[in-house]
Image 1 (cartoon, rainbow over the protein chains, first blue to last red):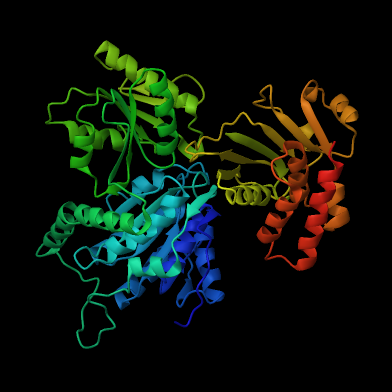
Image 2: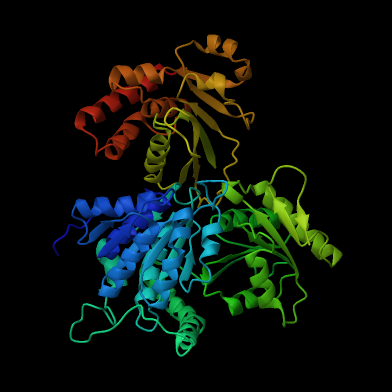
Length: 407
Length: 185
């Protein structure tokens, strides 16, 4: 190979951004088209540096906006390259129009989304507003809770995304600053092991295959549009989760690290359970352990794959829980939260008598403390003891001023 | 769990210092976490950085912390911010200042009755590295106060972490670390 390999320690102290950049290096991305934005900037900076230091054979395309960044990625992927980029927040929002193009054209692009609040007011810190904005875009969405996940899920995302049965783009999410700028121990793969896990990219219907010319980005009206959309949805509903499970299994064989579509923590005998995303999952696990010492049977469910939504896995994981809290780190702006709605949908039509309540927390990077979670688990136990939800269905955690609650 | 809060100005190297410390500790088999509060911080703005160290996997991602150690690497921050926030009885303070400990406590009564160590990291950095980057000297002082590692082991580890810098700068940092180790009171 014409590029240099890098010797890594078994454990490196990396933040989530650098972990993702290293994964992109080890996957040997052909093209990164990027317009940097806080807090995701170091991912594409890292790729550019590895490229100029001859650790990658590829191309970095500097563009004038995030819309152009994703457009460049779409062009490069349609041409037949392995493609990735990164963005956050306002940049993600500007990309949205092209996200639907990427998934509709069935192009296996990996987008690292370092989750950040959406303006207005402007805020560079982490919440899940941008992640939630992408959830109907037809992409696969993986969620990291720590830098190790941000590293591992990039390899997994390429494997799933590029599979010829899937051919759908994937986002790897991590929490802005709380994961992206937090350095922790990351257990590494060697360059060879990492690349072999992902494998050589085998394009399908690539435009540069002149023997088999194809058209990308076509127009279809009422004659065919619905069939295309239905087929994409069908593949998301039926093919993607089994493929992810298969790749998770292979990754465990390689690394010893086990990932699950729904990550259950102490749920088997739990009375009360928190369902959340991102770095909050790990904090909630720590608090659940402490609640058990106080006699409250607490569990935590982290959702590893947000899209396609693991409807059946969530339903099964929650079936014997007595009180559930759905934690949304994005303002629902006039509705219950996304997780509240999805969980309610999963449990409806089942025999469960679970008490479900929703919480909005952590907007614009506001801290979710262990003390908040202690109060939350205590409130859920009070619901169990009373046999009904004792609070309004939607509450806000950690916002200043009079306590806010609705429904 | 060992928890450290750094008080710094953006550009003085608190984040690099926190990550460097985490890197050294990680090589000894412990679990580490290093992070900071940024906001839209401009160079010179007051900021905080944090370390967590534990024997088991660190799952806590809250920013709230009752620190075991507080490092203040800019001498004015003792007066312009509350470096004693979220104090607990066992919290130890290592503060960059040209004042004596008595003068410092007299000037900032919040430090009264607390375990305070002083060292002039700014002067040490200026005289060794040639720039007022007080992060590595603070770690030298921390090694003395905490007795965490043998100073030679720590310096060898920092040499590896600073390896991408010019040799002259690496050497100057080693002198700075040793001086702060020797001079902290």
